[in-house]
Length: 158
Image (tube, rainbow, N blue to C red; front, top):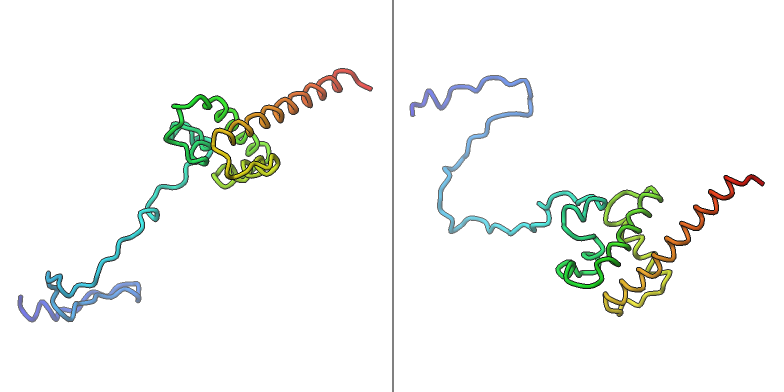
């Protein structure tokens, strides 16, 4: 390469912050003195969180199964109906309360249910599911009765 080619001025750019930088030392392929490359946590590159209302459709199980750390058992137990029932209730509460449809909202409602029932964290997941399901059934029946009461009150004016 001739010296004329090296000393040819660069064209003027409209942005004053952009300028060409020439390396002061030649780049070598020697890796002995190269800085250590640190491994980057893979969670940084995970895809955005799955919206909680389509979680089951994308993951193949309700979020409650993963929340209770039994995702790998889902579909292999006799409690799938109860898990699904609780999951549907929690999702309907997220809608009714106009919460953001994410895992934090879901977890908040499940914690609230567990708190009202005073569920011992040391219980097995089966016991937790059974207690939660009974309570959710009672809450759903209560809602149904309130709706019927409103219909009757509307139909029969005072």
